[in-house]
Image (tube, rainbow, N blue to C red):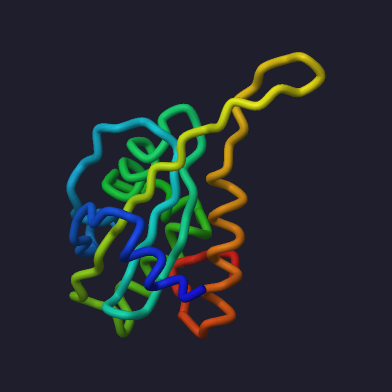
Length: 145
């Protein structure tokens, strides 16, 4: 499976992303749905990051972190913020990236008679990230590389 085609066929375009060097965060549209899911950050045909959002605030919360003023995180040595800043002020300086979102609703399952929500966003993100690496996408905004 081609992971770039998967993203473009199954995920919805959310917003363009432009890095704000002073704020050490991205200018992009907010998102108002708190469902869990997977998101993709693209530079043209290159996948820079595949991420998951499976916490209480789901995609809304994850996108909010990309939009928030992150200077404090940068100054305290947060590795993800430092990575974004390094990459986005290097050869990706001034680039307009694209973010796609794919809601992944939990599935109801029964385990020993107890009904639970099975969260698939984490497993899907892991598998898609492995495929993206195998298909030579740079994944430059992913701290897991």
